[in-house]
Length: 113
Length: 111
Image 1 (tube, rainbow over the protein chains, first blue to last red):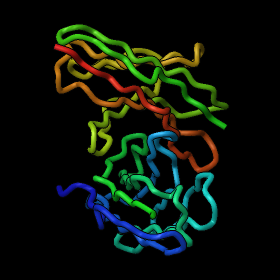
Image 2: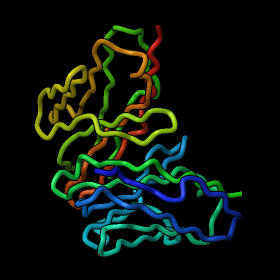
Image 3: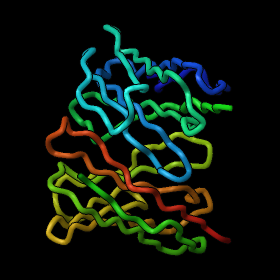
């Protein structure tokens, strides 16, 4: 089976712009979660989608949003980018039965200048 | 809310045994997971403890004691390739069951 894929791998944006990141889960996985990873804060949970519904959400401002499509692919969007949004954004999928076992994609490295 | 504490860094020599501890404060969770992340790579799942006790997977073992709010990852016969960051994580009960990660422990294996 192909692993979790994320596009793009690297992105440079300027403050105030918006960005959309994409994630394709492992085939058959219906749960997709997003995380922000920074050196100072570690892995921070953003949100989780299951069957096109947001199942839960982390403590991030409303500028961070996401969605999931009927084929389980997911996108996250960050509007009005701030310098502090520079991070590695990781997507992970799971089967929904063993939600503790997540399969991570390689991440999108976002730099905001 | 939940919080998990891990040592920030651990150093050990090749062939040795190292234990990475994870203590947590949580109102309820389903189990404790461990992930490994090499520099520049994606986290990969190592083990899960749903119940108290020891789980063994090859050179890696993981332990959970809910009464002590404590768990650990044990790595035996250390190899240079084990140099990586190790994260413990718990899945909350309630609030949709989101996965909360510790800050990670950077393990350096020396020859």
